[in-house]
Length: 318
Image: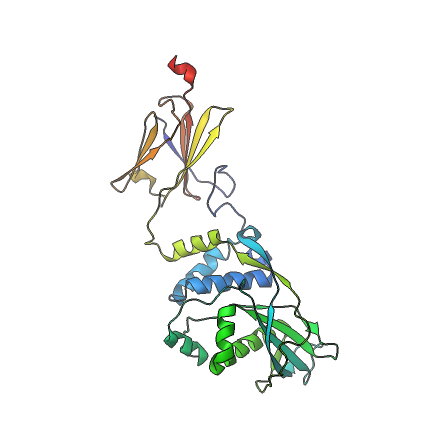
């Protein structure tokens, strides 16, 4: 029976790492669009627990890399326009009094807001403190209408857009959110006295490429937020034909390895955790139970239990 070896692994020492830990923290290297998309996704997941959002900030944002994002090409659809002007500016490019148009557009590819009660939505509309409801928004690049006016394209999911068409208070909320985005990006303060031109958009709204968080990253975040989520045993099997090894990779629920019991038979692994016995069939594979090359390593940082077991060959039964 192989002896369990515990390895204080760094990010790259485990060659069989399949979890989200095998990465270099470089959140600061993500674009503003990617950071905003990730924050909006996380906010949607933690809508009922804002304190959990704060706890996650230093943990998962520091681990996110560009590999955690999917690239999505979208063409925002024109909706309606807000016309306002600059009342103060820290930018030489956008002077006080200059006109600003904000195209409110929509796309089904933009993340939808979290499911929330009408009471919670009304709190957001009234700008009450400690509100959990937020509409994800993607702001396009600055452009000019050809007459010296700034044009910005604020894209939201189709669901909140449709509500904003019928609900005046909700529309005002979307407009306020959009103006806040423009102010932060451009470095100006906008007047809250605005008009609504009859056109659907100022100029043609250009397509854009979004980098949205992959489901795997969001699953990791939800698991961190909900420690009561039941751990599931999902072993992965790799056959190394050259070395005649069966490699079994098991993502463990914690690093309390001293409480584990591991037994290996000809065609199955018996793993006991917290008095619960888990049987892992080796399917069509058979192994040599007491072979000297059998190894069991546990990588504490990645929580990966890796078994390397010598495969039995047909010649051994002749």
